[in-house]
Length: 58
Image 1 (tube, rainbow, N blue to C red):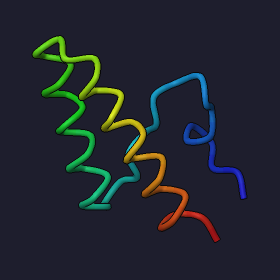
Image 2: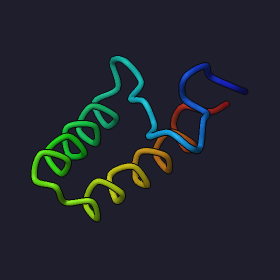
Image 3: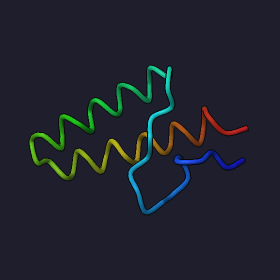
């Protein structure tokens, strides 16, 4: 199932509204960006994609 805005592998994943895990990973990513820590930013993106595949796909 395709979810608009959530399936473009060339863009950072979007958090699903109302999901605490997505929200936490989005916050982690924002903090990494603010600190110019690209490795931590990438880690948060990977974890969010894994979470979304597991929890937000039928």
